[in-house]
Length: 434
Image (tube, rainbow, N blue to C red; front, side, top):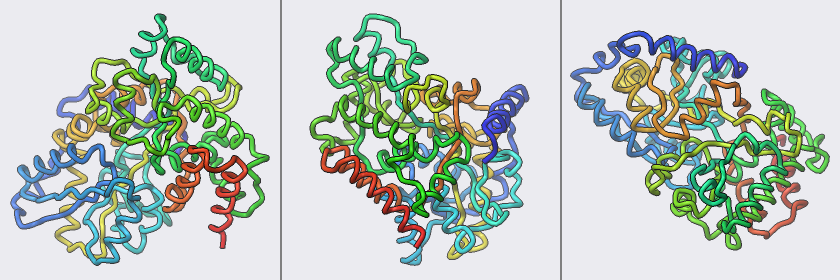
């Protein structure tokens, strides 16, 4: 992945240029499939919150082209890699699959269609996932994560204006928690118990904040070799300090593992809590929880007390989900139909709009001039435009979130010590080098 300024230039400057043109970059993308009413393809969706939106897009696409797109959902809590691996084992893989970057790298050369010559490559410059110089997947969306705040709830509770830019250190986060508690909000933050949230989206800050670019590669390499001990690594110490604070003020305390992901957004939407650790993908959950009418945004997952530290001033955001096309079982006709569907999402105004408005995502393609309509997407896009994001995205094994997510769950519940958490992480990584 190229430097953040390159990404901003591609995504934002390119979008502004295209916005000034008529037609929204419209291209004859769907016509190549028109009339192929006997073609049916499947799409594995690992983003449960956009299932309904994808189904809406699929219906429009079928009405336009005659091609049936069945959207298949991963089960709740099931990793995309586990799901697609089981489907391959059963001999019925999906035609297209929305996966994590790690999964694509694992499957690419053996299972995926080479997409290196597709026209849309120029629209996603610097954001593709390559394996041995070839592109095997389409970058589906930009996602950002951090601590979501409900500005409305904070200001109503405190009776004063809230400036999110003032939360740029451990001490400032602790101070706002204490102030909210003193004003009657006993538990100001929601921490979800899901292994993917704990084991990927939170724990990976330990790797990704090494230097904001590719420092995670060095951290992981040293963990694999055993040369890095977490007790001597300042980012891990800072991470645990922050996580301990979140544990203390978690609205799901004192039974954090009894929490439900359905209830968590309700706490934030209704103002019972003021913060929720999550990402831009969580807007559909907040919307369903009745969250319209509140003002939302992101503060960083603060690490330590250096207010000049990039980790305390920027939100993590990257092209996090990738779409690959199967070459093992898909027919030539299905492969072409899958390629046509991706072109529809990139070049057809209807497809562009569907991604943004029906799925509430930040599109990767520079020619998509539609702006996010939801407050979380808008917050990430604004952060990108003001140099307030870092793009480091650690590539980890497919079982990372389940194995270390379980270790994080034990620590969240007070069932393990910091030393035991350290050992779990170190043992996991040294086992990867065997």
